[in-house]
Length: 173
Image (tube, rainbow, N blue to C red):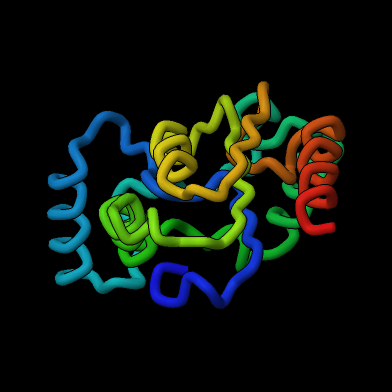
């Protein structure tokens, strides 16, 4: 949208990954660790602090709010070895740490695209403040903040999902 702001009429972002939460580790240090690890182990190697799959995780420890959706997700992960082995990679996390400076700048104010931004109040994966900043930079945007929602908005309660789909339907119709 920054390169061709007139080409896209409408766009929606669901808990955009502008700045991942990194347990109070400074971003510059995290980037250094990621670059170092990627150089020695590879860009597609699992991040050094990535957790192993835990088949005994509870609903409270997950990003899900819906018990039925949590159960379905866990059954899928338990039955498919590919899901169990998938972890955050050095490359993915490095890219995620570089989004904020690339996105939250003067070029963003030139975007004319009508944008709908969903933000989860209890997001445990990404920081909410950069999402609010993105909303302020995008002159033609609407920020929908969903209370009691975690990062995976579409794995939330039926009320959360209903809020998201209702806002999307109104926005795109």
